Length: 99
Image: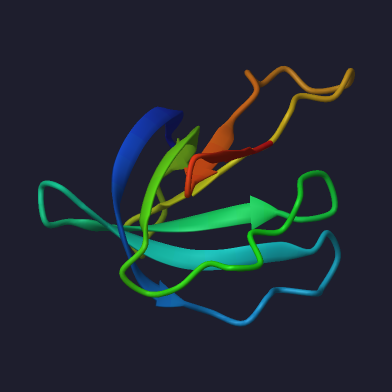
């Protein structure tokens, strides 16, 4: 798998049920300004959940983009922990920063 850091912004296109297996994650797709979509997988055991997220909302994000056979996803949208070698990521929604 290839991974790199990605900054993006766009509109929430689809919201999925939270993934509650193992570490809990909030999942949604964002339609980017280039008309492509990306799945955002936001760890809600480490960061706050975005409770008022709606389809059509504008968001900005920074995290690790990881390519997979489905096209890829963005994760690590939270603060770094002492054991990890990743940069801290974030999501911005309605002028609130979620890390």
